[in-house]
Length: 500
Image 1 (cartoon, one colour):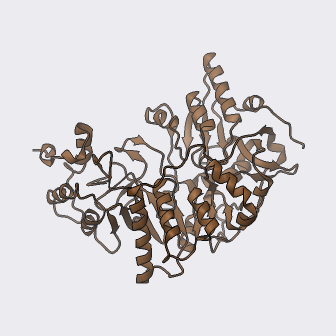
Image 2 (cartoon, one colour):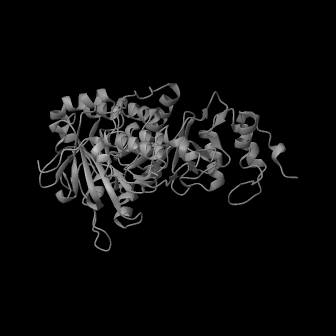
Image 3 (cartoon, helix red, strand yellow):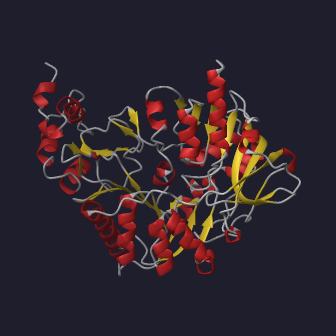
């Protein structure tokens, strides 16, 4: 091999204060695991010597503890985009220790190519292999790696020997041309291949290779489906069955997108057991353990994704059965897996989770009480705004009934009423299509809100001035103000918040 072999510490020396650094991966899979901790150690040494050391970190989505976690603990991040889910990074963002820019995931790569953020100094990419002419077989996620390899001044490659040779062929690397030369993306169904199985880098840019040996997949187990999430899954499944029966959805069904988490798993479990929904394809940004079950059973015919967000056990199972599953899955760059053009063309049904929804269908999916960042908007906006049918899901109540997820007004808006078709809770399905805002409010109270909170929500509407949207600016955040004061939204007394 023509590339120098580096230790992680030697590689970290190429990263300097103030640099723009891109990392591979999308969620936990595919992220570098050895060089970022070495950069964090360098940052600690620099800080102890009284010197500034912080970088601007760009990814495909969230990363792992080796990256966001280690660099956060070392106070080594100045700017972060486009998404995170780190319990170490999140409180530092909320404390204002660093700058965080929450972006639609499909936009990050092209924004770098358009020079929105200045040049990328160094990219750190996990891979299965690299050839002397710069052909790279990526790992268990693609993210923005193909663009980072293109735009970065210098590249460090982590070769993880836990990535089997059978991963070759599971990637579909396609980068669109930039305007005004862009053409249609040649994907007309979820299983279409548009690009090449390998990414490419100019060999002259490669600083060196760092050899690693790290297990693949998530270490922690996914939260099991409980009674509440099971009901949500069943409600979503019944809605889809009804849509096919009414003729609003083709009886051959449509590709689906599903987020990560226990609610998404519950929906996929319901789809697996359904006898009325035909076998389907997925065009999504992540696939998790429940999708592996669907692929093995044949309920999911094909999964197009950006990342195999499997547990370690499921990842091992996937590669042990790669001969049977190899032609049922493709991993694409995030600007393709989340591409609005393709989502709209092939008619994707989007299914994402919400922190809270208001009476008119606005969705908060990223901030608690309007101020505290949880994770970010992620890819939910890419899919919601372009879906054939957009669905948001959440339990109707949380924290021992003290919090209603259906509120008069959300404290932060990620998705407006114009993009939200359906809200599903454990109580039922609220269909917001074909309704004016006040009809939506009645539908949401009746079908999605928990019975404990329905009287309060109706009382709120009765205190609003007439208009196209029933709203009372004095009282709109009364649920949240009561939660802050009493720790229980059920104690809301609108009279205490009325401005005399």
